[in-house]
Image 1 (cartoon, rainbow, N blue to C red):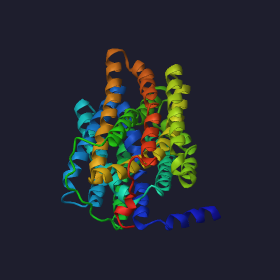
Image 2 (image 1 turned 180 degrees about the horizontal axis):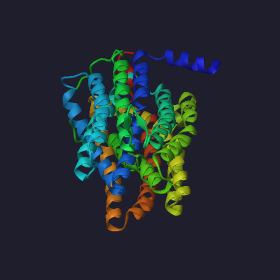
Image 3 (image 1 turned 120 degrees about the vertical axis):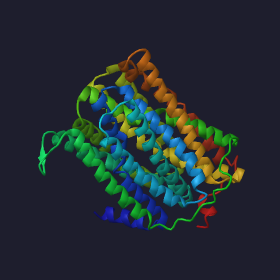
Image 4 (image 1 turned 90 degrees about the vertical axis):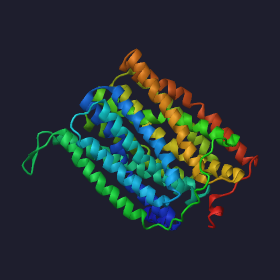
Length: 427
């Protein structure tokens, strides 16, 4: 208990804006498992086609990259913190709308996926922008370790609660209403909206300054940022499968939302404390070790899934996936922001320029992964795509390690001048 109080005091010692963003993200992290896991399970339950889940996800990513572009224009008129709140609220509203529509066909999937992606795009891009200007390279390991801890924590609790609720709601009568599983999904999305409103209230307590948003749109970038965009493409390639694959595979081999929540929860329990401790004690020099270990774990998981292609293989893959994701993010995002610090100083451009182009880089990777799956599913079979598409992208993802090492080496050897974002903001 003494250690818990010490960690709380350390959290309280952080600047106001860092605390505000972390608590806001802590609340939004309660909604993310519903968006990322159970939306796919809902589609599988109502269509039974893995390719439909992937198509929904592809449309969602189109919405994300469009939101990044639109957000750039809106920053000329609104503060980033207001667009951040808008993204949080609309994410919950869009998810609710999909669950309340009767009948899930291709058009509904595409439109729902696009608008949910548009909403979450506002969330992620403004989250990156506020984080970039509220942190520096020395405290980013702690920031993303703390954030990953609660993402992992809620990835334990929320799937278990939601899975148990959906697994037991069928046929129950509450207030003279006979519930189905689909009605249970609707109840969950209403609760998600309430949580989203609470997150916006917390965010309003920060002291965020309006950022300069002139000359945001560029095509030509410094070689260092082009390397970072390639790294973003590799990350995006796997990112889509992190969302769709667990829901598809568990619903196919294990059976229900309850099983999905249990497996997801057990896996996240293995990582929650680990990523917090790493974020607390790891130095910037340790990032590539964490990064490489995460990549290796994910690739091993894809091999088990592809070779066994059974309930056992799925469980091993999901456990590897939930270990990989926070470890990867813990190393990736501080690297991305350190690169933005460097390149924005070299090119004298606004930080959002790089955040926006980073979303484009992620999108190309995501689109490649999703299209690869759809092509394999349509030309061979859904099972073939589920077995081998992830092995392909997992193997390609291993190229991220030498590329990230090269980026960090260029910065740390003073090949390029580095200026902390904290200095730019007068901290």
